[in-house]
Length: 153
Image 1 (cartoon, rainbow, N blue to C red):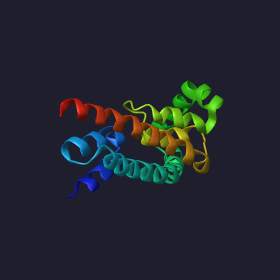
Image 2: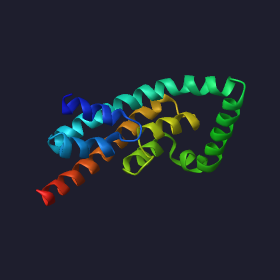
Image 3: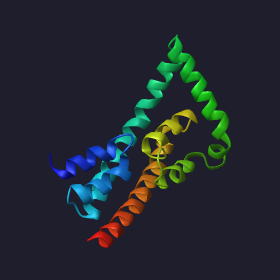
Image 4: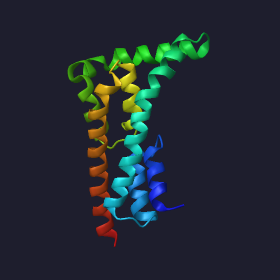
């Protein structure tokens, strides 16, 4: 499989996202940091936009389905709303930019799309801030990876 495709798929993967795709592209795939950044960001933004459009349908179906899955989803969504409402209330959709821009575990596009659904941020309002956050996170990871590459080689 071409390394560009692997980086694109890793960029779209839930746990790897840009934090895993860019280093893999540079160190295992032999891509330049800029090429790895490009393909990882394309994969991550693509899945983010798809998730924004699909999650509301999935979440609504979970909340209206009877049984343990409904109880769990209602509990989890209400817990998330209760604990993090003040952060999202203040910044609204722009909170997603800050949330995604910091390249830490569980702060990527997948989590941001879930947060947009949980806090009732319309997909159209969430697209730009989340995408900008992905770009910033990818830039931080690409710059860090390039620095490590210079130190190692």
